[in-house]
Image (cartoon, rainbow, N blue to C red):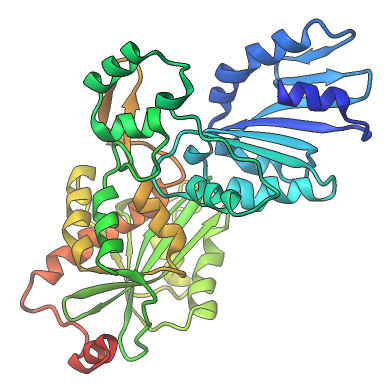
Length: 386
């Protein structure tokens, strides 16, 4: 209704307003029927079902539904106002890289709605809004609004874990993300002071672990092993970048000396057109030495990641995006059966989490071996401030 009201009142020519959900189909399921219902009585309204778009001929305003799962679709457009619904489930780059710039030339407004999902981009923007008089904030806890009666709330408490109830009904950002694989491990890392400024040790080699994307993101972790510590000193993620360009970034824009590059098993599959594998292509581009990660079950890879996480130190600035991926990487929810599936949810967190899983699968066996050579004792002493 805010969007419809704003569109009717807007005096700017060709005004554009958008409702954005985490997924395009979700936007359709949640909002499309309402949008048609509340604009239907208006005269001469045009409805476009294929584009989920409503046009108001009286003033040229347009309302449209989008999904943040394909936020590149919104590049190059402008908005006078947007609603971002369930923002905690969105890739935060949708806002910072696409939607926010699209509001600038029209000085448009934005409304963020959602259920907390731990300390992520939604929590950050909420905290920012609380300190800024230019923002309006409202938190609607079920125990305070009276919108849900006490009997129903009591029944919900019986059926849900305390974390689930606090998150879904009481708007708690502190509750652990339900179904997150590494939520507790990353919370413990923060408590232990292992998410901080982590120095790169130039005298020691760097290991990279990749998750290769074709139509989506490629993610790369950069790690050094010093004594019993695994230091995550950098993280790189890119979207829709040709494979040939990525080694140039590592060799020309990163100052590191590399020990090994860990890549997933499918890197050895030959492409039909060229007959050359991506591993061979990367080697021809100068990326060496490449170690292909063994094909292991996802569950085993997740367990390997959990085993090395207590040894990991994360650079808070350079690996911020990767840290967010690990915090929010979670199991897929089966809406019909109301249980978590055994497989992970594939979303924006998957690429960073998968790359970390390959790193763990390759490093964990070696960190247990007495023949594995770690960094120098002096490097470790320097790190600890000795």
